[in-house]
Amino acid sequence: MSENLVIIPTYNEKENIENIIRAVFNQPTPFHVLVIEDGSPDGTADIVKSLQLEFPEQLFILERKGKLGLGTAYITGFKWALKYTYSYIFEMDADFSHNPVDLNRLYDACAKQGADVAIGSRYVSGVNVVNWPIGRVLMSYFASKYVRFILGVKIADTTAGFKCYRREVLETIELDRIRFKGYAFQVEMKYTAFMCGFNVKEVPVIFVNRELGTSKMSGGIFGEAFFGVIQLKWSSWFRKYPQKK
Image 1 (cartoon, one colour):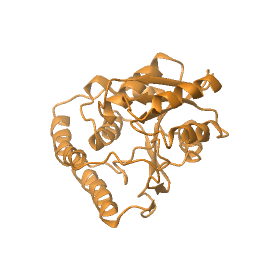
Image 2 (cartoon, helix red, strand yellow; image 1 turned 135 degrees about the vertical axis):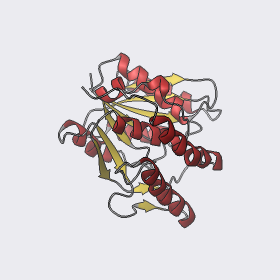
Image 3 (cartoon, rainbow, N blue to C red; image 1 turned 30 degrees about the horizontal axis):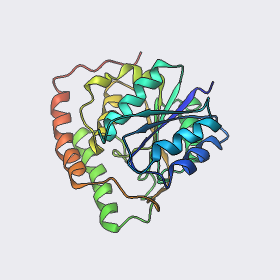
Image 4 (cartoon, rainbow, N blue to C red; image 1 turned 30 degrees about the vertical axis):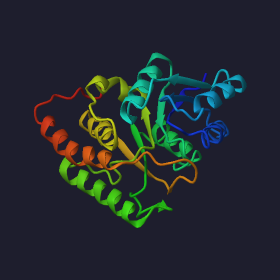
C-alpha cells in the first residue's frame, strides 16, 4: 500500500490520461492515482477503467455527473484519500503541464524537509513557464502578485495547482467550508493552510502549456479569483481557523 495519492481531475483528456498515469507509476517514489472524472463525452473514463485491469491496486476512479468544478473535484478526492491510509496527497493536472518527475521533489519537501504543504511554483525563481502566450503569463504572474498583496501571504505562486499536502493539513482544514471552484479554490486552500499555521514551502518547477486537448481556462475563473480574494480576506477577519496541532 502506497502512502502517496495523486489526485487527477479529468474532463475530455483522452489524449493525455493513459500517458500521465503511466508516467506517475514510473516514478521512483511509489504513488497511487485517483482520477476524478466529470462525465467526459470523449471516453476518458473508459481508458482509465481499461488501465485498472493492469494496475488494480494502484489506480482508482470516481465518476461524477457532469462538470462540477475543479474545487469540488479535489474536495471529493481529499475526502476519499482521508478515508484510507494516505499520508501525502497530491494535486496534479492531466495534461503534462505538471511534470510527473517533480512529484518526487514535492514529496521530499513534505516527507523529508519539514513542509506541510509543498507547492510546485512557477514564480519562486523567476518566471518558469513554457509555451504560454505572453498575455496569459502576465495575467497569471500579476494575479499571484495581487493575491499575495491582498492576503498578505509570502507565496510567490498563489494560484498554482501542483501541490502536496501532508494528511494532517487536510484533516485540519474544514473542507466543507472551502467555497470556491476555479482558480480561487487554489488560492483559498493555500490561504487556509497558512491561516491554520501550517508550513507552506515553494518548490521551483517548470510549467509547460498543454500540447494535446483543450484548456479549461475561462474569464469567469479569473473573475472568481479577482473578487474571491477580497471576499476571502474580508471573511477571515470574522473566522476562527483551526490550528495545526
